[in-house]
Length: 159
Image (cartoon, rainbow, N blue to C red; front, side):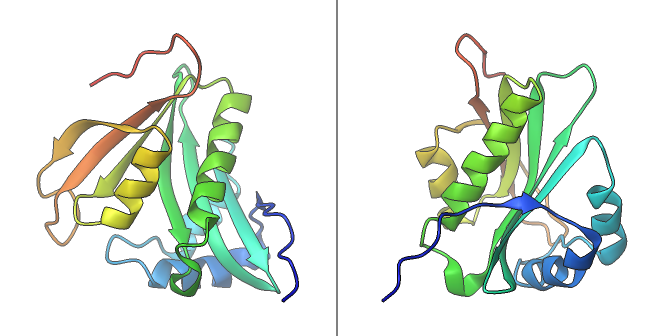
């Protein structure tokens, strides 16, 4: 078996749209569409990153950055179903955190489906703590959890 190359996500580009949509199709509900992805690729207040292996997108992340805010928002982190459990989610999360720090953010916040135990485990292992519960947050009525992490010493997690 040949060793896997290092995980190196890159900035998403317009030719990545089909791959992004294919990844998104594996996520239950609240999916982004082509127009939304196209917007985020060109949005200076967003960071849309992809991981490509053997010509196929296997993971993506999308973070938002508000002017005047020290808190990045991880809006989406998707790993292809056949690649889950191999560390890609953790690598994409670490990549998103690096970008947030590079942009001067002290905290990162996200929402996750309360029934997504795999994602919740990933986020908790990375140091995220629950700061809120969101009843009926998703389109299908599923509850959500709001999680947050300090990205810099001295930053306070806010409820």
